[in-house]
Image (cartoon, rainbow, N blue to C red; front, side, top):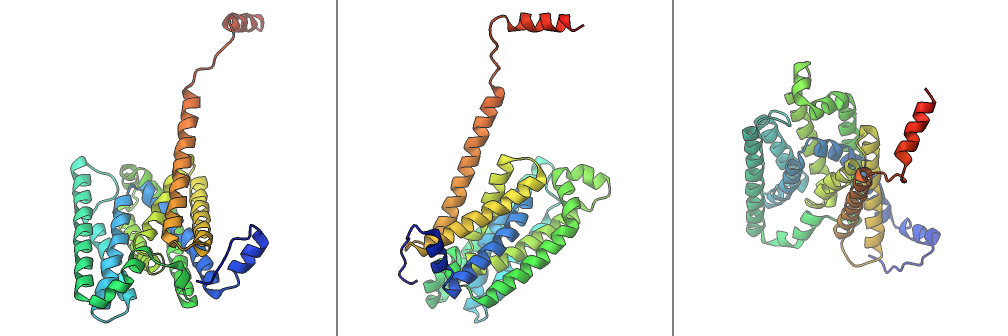
Length: 311
């Protein structure tokens, strides 16, 4: 990282940021992933599968560690473990809703896979001594070491995933909002759920190479949760999710460039601040809606007289 100082001149600071190829790649990758994570995360939060998404992001860590242990590229480990875990969840679940017992079994399965994956990751790190040097990067990632090839690959993955979501978006939304009614009308609820999980696993596998296993989950859940707290309109909420994710990602890049602290800390902190602001705004709005309207004395009688006079 070159020596940098914040000049309080936006034009100068932007020119400084964009003068380095690694920062240009970081901003490009951040924008692409903000869109991809925004769309997938919006459906994930709507379907109440945040725990599943968290598990898929955690599974990326032992995948990369295991691939490095056997001497192959970490990319293969990311995709093998993330997509494999998504397939396991898809085969074991039947949509988003169901009986309490069914939901409990799904949560137990997700927690079991997560615990086993973490144990495998720690084992792989212990077996491969030299791997400890990259332990932090695997968990928290680094936008500042992104290559042009990684940006292109991330863009292709985003295009493929978003194209598939465009095709299945309407039935997936129907199946997410009311799976029982959707199934009664012939919507393939279980197939859509399985396909969504596989898409989520593939996106997490690709993005984890850049963002790390933990940061990818933060960008999946926080912007979507914030947007859905602010509005219940699907399209507005989806666009707001993408905008929030894009904003906190680029703001985190700027903050990390001008400080010695990691990008993951800033992105997560900014996203959490946005969520707290949305919660506060939502609470204030609810309190204002519940507050009874005070009328001056005699206003009821006056309204009655006016109503009587208009008859």
